Each structure stands twice: as C-alpha cells, then as structure tokens.
Length: 105
Image (tube, rainbow, N blue to C red; front, side, top):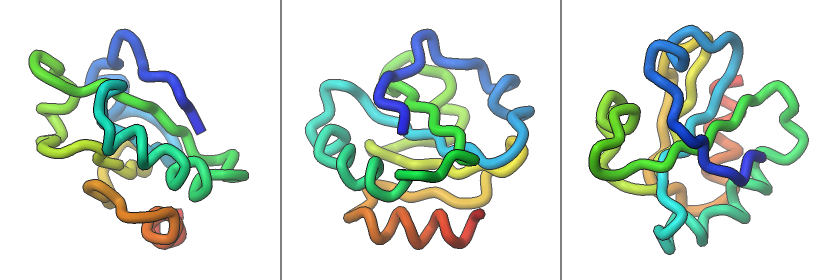
C-alpha cells in the first residue's frame, strides 16, 4: 500500500498508458473519511504485489480528479492497462475492497 499522496499528481496521459492493474485512490490528507479508510485499504491490498497503488490528492484545481469525475472521497478507481474497469466510492470496509479486487484481478 502506498501511504503518500503523489506530488505533483501525474497527468492523465501517464495514467492512461500504465500497464497492468492500478488502483487510484482519490482523497485528501485532511479528509477524516479518507483517514478512517486507510486500515481497510491496507488490509485489502496486503500482499498484492502486482497491484500498483497511487494516492492522488484531489480538490479544487486538480485536473486528474476532474477527468475521472470524482465527487466524493475516498474514491478507488481500478484500472487495467490504463482503462477503468471498476470503482468504489467511500468503501465501507476491507471486505468490499477485497471483493472488488477479486473481480478485477
């Protein structure tokens, strides 16, 4: 699990060409709901070495979040070879994240 927000955020053109499985985590370091979700995200992604995890700080003026139409935090966007295949908005627990990961892997 990546616990550091990308700074600066990568451009969409780089995200769209990422090979393999990627999980984009959109949120903010000041978001209490994002902070509370961290243990669940860590538990769900533990041992998944083939999963690329990129934390994206979202907010006003952040283009990447707008390009993915992010409305609420945290939002997990799952990509395969740069294409969105699933997303979770405010996942309730680790089990929900694990189930989605099983479907996309």
